[in-house]
Amino acid sequence: MAEQLYAYAVARIRSKELQLLGRSDVDQLLNCKSEKECLKLLAEKGWGKTGEESSEAMLKAEREKTWDLMKELVEDTSVFDMFLYTNDYHNLKAAVKQVYTDTKDMDIYITQGTIEIGMILDAVREHNFSALPEHMHSCAEEAYQVLLRTGDSQLCDVILDRAALEMMLVKCKESKVELLARYGELRVAAADINIAVRGNKTHKSKEFLERAMAGCSSLDKKKLSSAALESLEAIYQYLQFTDYSDAVEAIKESSSAFERWCDNRIMDLIRPQKSNPFTISPLAAYILARENEIKTVRILLSGKRNDIPDSAIRERMRDMYV
Image (cartoon, rainbow, N blue to C red; front, side):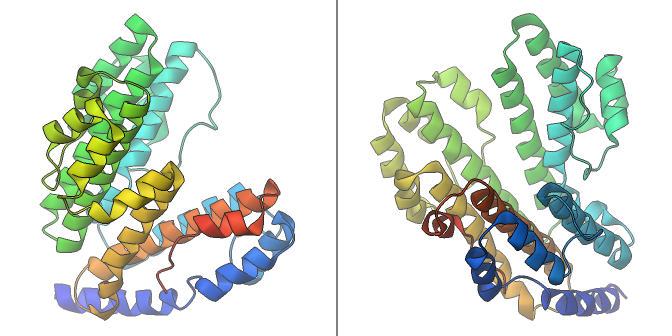
């Protein structure tokens, strides 16, 4: 029965994949003279909902379309919660800081998540973290108290970012889906590598590094943090003996180049799902392909808006799923 259900869902996904942007579409957008011209071209390709839209409104609409489709295809969308935990924890960070600073700005929240924004905000305002899912209880309390006592917003972020990564990885492994397990592992490893590199450049302490890193099976957290305390070269040398040796050149180039490497690695991970007709993996791959597509368009639109040369924008473009 499950195979029949997924066969129908995957058939729908296959038709939707035909609408994904390919390299030729990205080239078309790059050839546009302005952000407005890009938005017009995207609207002609079916992007957005209401005709003339801002770039943010259009990207938000596309993300909503993805999740509306998943709700049509899967009775219980909690199987994809691992893709939304970062939004939940972003909203928790926003709520903690909003309560701390006593501001009213609601534009700081992300609408796509597993927990209602109002529930998160009420929990922080009332200091009732038991109203949140269990995986948020202790980290929410810790982040709240840290900000209240020290005013250190970076440490607050570190606590909640790590908790988000750890929960995402747990959910990915619990899924028993190989694609999701590998995705979760890659996401955490990339975050830990980023922390190590930035930590070295900003002279962070051993305590900070170990507190910030989530840890995963493909990296030795202690060895990576020790390398970060020593030098960038020590980080590169350590990574040469891991699954991430091919990331070293990207790290040396820039943080944006490493981010592009991570996104392209995810595309390499999900492409084999195009020939997988009977499991949930092609649906997960489609969600990741859409996120990659939206991120690519966001980078491109930002470049056009800020008059960045096309050659510089092109260097930041991601590999596409199709």
